[in-house]
Image (cartoon, rainbow, N blue to C red; front, top):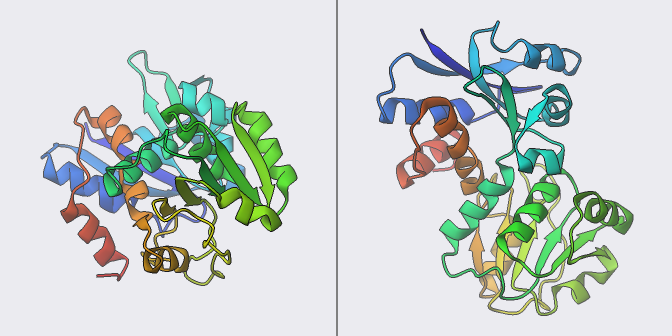
Length: 280
């Protein structure tokens, strides 16, 4: 029997998940395993998720715009997905039921630790740019990791305040973009959680001169690998972490759950993905 897993989204052709997971399948010589793309229209998402087994899939990744639909459709969730009300990984439990999980925050923290091994959660507040879906996962992960203060900068601070309330963040505060300089003061970490800086998008336009020199700067955007924000931070003497590792690390827990082997994010895998992106 072939153990099939898919990534579902709309659109989904751009996803590098099959490249990542099929590399690990080959690396670990897992027989009769395959990872596929599955393009699913929004109106068909709930039905597709409910019938994954009938489609011969033992699990799935879920990408935009189906993460909230997956949460609402499934009746079993891990604690992280339950808190975020969003699912990016579906696994089959021993009793045959489907459970929704969310590994986005795990991927962010694992990438941060990999790229900046000296980072310590308790050393200064974390400043987040943006209050969207990625920001939710990252804020929750930072709090769980032990960051004592989270400052969320958003064009509409009301949205940041709603995020704080919804997640029940205990030590978080919303800032408007006009208050960015104040938010950066004394920070130990700056995170861009928006798509600003992505190829074709305008760059993050903030003055980072108020950021302490020992603060780490990271970006979830990985095309280009060094965004405008990361370049300015590097030139100012900051340690920087690009966003590609978040994509790679968030895939690890799902692969382990589906195939019983915990894979590793290696330089070889990173180079394979970069080559596929045309960024070698």
